Every structure is written in C-alpha cells, then in structure tokens.
Length: 147
Image (cartoon, rainbow, N blue to C red; front, top):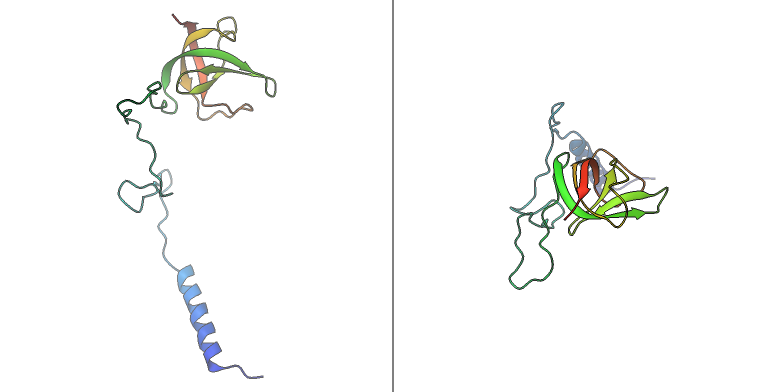
C-alpha cells in the first residue's frame, strides 16, 4: 500500500506546526508576583463586557436608591439595615441594606434580633465561605440600634 506524497507533506507540516507551538517560550510570573489579565481593547474586559463603574452616577430622572459601591475585601465598614434570619442549613443571620445583603459572622444575638434595624461595624471577610452563600461575609465588630 503506497501513500501519496501529498499526504506525507501535509502530515509533516501538521506535526511540525504542533511541535513549534509546543515549544513556544512562555513567561512565567516570579514567585509572589500577581498576574493581571490585560484586555484586548482599551476599556474592555477579557470577557468583552464592561463592568459597571463604581463611580457611575444615576441618570437624571432615574428612580430608586443610590447604591454605594461594594466595600473592598478585608476592610472595616459600617452598614445600616434590617437583620433577618434565613433558615437554611442550620440558619444564617443576614443584614439587608439597600445595596447589599451581608451574612453576619459573630455579634451579640441580643442586638441582632430578626426584624430590628441596626448599624453594624464590621470587617469584610472574603476568606470565609459559608453554607448559606447569601452575600459577602461581614464579621461583626459592634452593633447598635439604628435611629
């Protein structure tokens, strides 16, 4: 059985291309450095969608509350909202604010009763995962009734 020289030529070209692709140099980040994906066009995200601007102002005549941008991870924030209890996998206590629902971690249960409006000072905890997964985790530093 003989094979056509064209098949040999195409097979060789394909294998050569695969070999060259596999040998392409790659730049690896140094240990301890971070890699930030670069968008392909100015202002574009890698997925092609633009994220909402945290400093975006509502359009004139728009209704609804002006929502502040979400807190950065691991920072101390103060949030005012209503305490709720979610009966999921043993229950979770959350703070519903006009812009974000936080899952509360710790705090005095006497002050964090469901249905009460409170002001909570706490630290965002991006390193903590929970069963309820209802929002960012806020570790309570202090809580007081809101006026």
